[in-house]
Image (cartoon, rainbow, N blue to C red; front, side):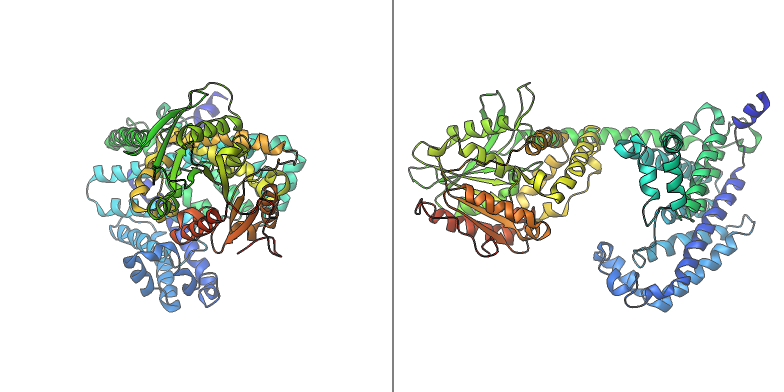
Length: 622
């Protein structure tokens, strides 16, 4: 037993050239398999196929002119088949033994051709191709180098990438509830794409064993970086566990290339984890580890500095920002604009949606400020932007309603009334506050609003509730770790007016916004799930502006909008064609259509109080 344990927990000594050769061959097998698959399925390159170039060229990558020109050159079927044939031939050549520098050129050819064909093949590429590309780049450059130190740097690079890929995959899975409770494996096994009926039946017959297997995979992935500890004693069990996992993926899930792609990194892991005193790794240059640690420390410092700078931008607000203390002690930051003289024109008060910003209304507020007599007030709820939540009481929606009521009383002059404008969750908040101050409200404008019964009546909304909660929770956690520097700029943001974009992006990379959203969503879900179906009548007239995609995707939503209109003494529903929930505000064209509807409504908001809701045969006016 002692001998067996000693054999299991012992290093895997392997020389530099041996590690390079094994990694080359395994990654070459991956590329060979990939190209043979594409050659076998060459009909998919024809018009109407999965890889029809007329469809593939619409992919985001081809927006880059250089990439589009290169890809266009190989987009023809003959050229694509020729490249795959060449890749297969080079891959076969790399399977033979040898240490020639030409092997490096062959690996780099496979890397370059994979990159060129990436856009050509949107369907069929996966993580195995990406790993093969990484290994082939490293082995190719190492082969072409005459310096042993340079070769060691490339081998260390792949070894560290292996640890990173496993750890990242494991820790991300660990955040998912289904991976923690053991239901993810049976769920995958019953899918059409990756499932395997026999394996699924085994998970149902032996649920405890299935759970142990799933948690073992999680443990292996999360803890894989420890392979570099203990002088190589953990190399054998960790590589054996990872290799077994990929073989199982190949047979059970049909991911055949995984059996060679990821194990192609293992020889380099073995080389870098062996004790430096072993003759096979004598003279190994380990400075790459210190360089990586230094880069990591520098990256962490830059990320922290960037997060702090963005937090300062968020907290500072705009030069015109003001602050107000509510009855709960919360400090609200708000902005005003437009005419503040003795005009009787109403003041528009804007209330944003969940995990949204007051700047989302920019296209609308700027039009009213510049082209009307109405004044504008927009604010950030407690916890968003520069607004601070100071109360320690458990959060309920009425707290936000109280804050909004206090803000309206403080910012809307006594001789002027308010038109309350709410988007999404903001719509529900303005409805509730209007019942408290009917004498101060001239009308309500709902922009694709939430409905208190939506989680009970809309299957789509109810099903999406958990995903929404998970997304907000994960964003709050990740951003709290300073990962905002890695956050990509969402496309909708660049549709806002140019001078608002950086400020909004700073808010979205700040964990405070997502923490506030998580707090609000918990209260919203509890409140909406217990809604008894009775909305009190509202004296003020109302306009509900719906996004076409919202009502098209969920007909129940339109019914609820009509119901909301009938709650008011005079209500009407209008639909902005082509708009979705967010672009109703962020797209200039849709936002300006919204402004026109709002302007018409405000002109008529003092109409006959006994008039009925205005709805057409479909329940909406377009």
